[in-house]
Image (cartoon, rainbow, N blue to C red; front, side, top):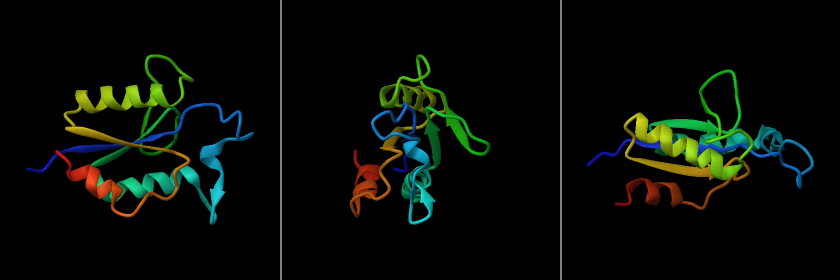
Length: 111
């Protein structure tokens, strides 16, 4: 059975401890948020960035209110996933540029 999967990059929050916008910080010349999006892309049907706005792609505001951080982003992704008919949501933080080998694949096919 093929499941419809939504990938959610949790990118809200204020990055106070980091000292600047963590999602925009570069690793090997690429923003951390872009690394996270690309890590999910092969395994999901759609990727949403939660907790911020952008010019292209699917951006979801935190729920139930702005600036709620990861929980607000996850809530937004779960609500969007249910409303749009996704079977599951796989989430990663925007500051997770590298995932363990095979992790997303194992989660994507798990029952």
